[in-house]
Amino acid sequence: MKEREQEDVNAGEDAGPSYKGTSTIVWKALWKQNVKQKLKVFIWKCLHDALPVRDLIFSRTNKGNPMCGGCGESVETLEHMLLQCTKAKEIWEMAPDQWDGLVHLTDNFQKWWSAVIKAQMIRGNDEHINLTVNILWQIWKGRNDREFNQKDKEPHGIIEKASMEWMEFEEANRGRNERRIM
Image 1 (cartoon, rainbow, N blue to C red):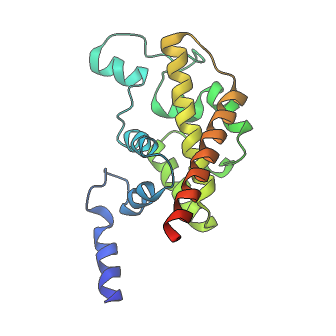
Image 2: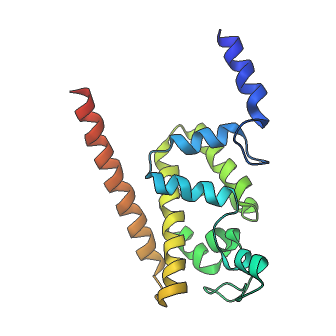
């Protein structure tokens, strides 16, 4: 039975609801994360190149400015906005969890995320990735505040908000799990 299950896992590596280039392991790991559902959907959208960043909007509508509103130095792609922009780099430098070994993958979010998942599996600790998801979400929200409300959030404020929301969610779930046991 175990051999059959392993064959199914290996055979399904490129099949199923995966986006091209993203393994089943990555999808399963995403949906198992202990974060808010909206954050899972956010990462899913990132992996499907479905977040409305300036470059994507410009390429689809030929309207607007594709340049990053944060730094003005590059086209605002998903990777630029979340990982490469000087504003994003400042945030990641302040983050309690570092993914320094993945800097060479920041030009491709799918590859970067896959490497984060693999690193999580090696570490055996979900906390790092759950906080990372919250930081990515807060970078996105900060970008939207800048884009639509002309409010620029400080990097330490984004880290604090991400950490606070992550800890609150962890604590709320811990209480819920304890109630289930009783």
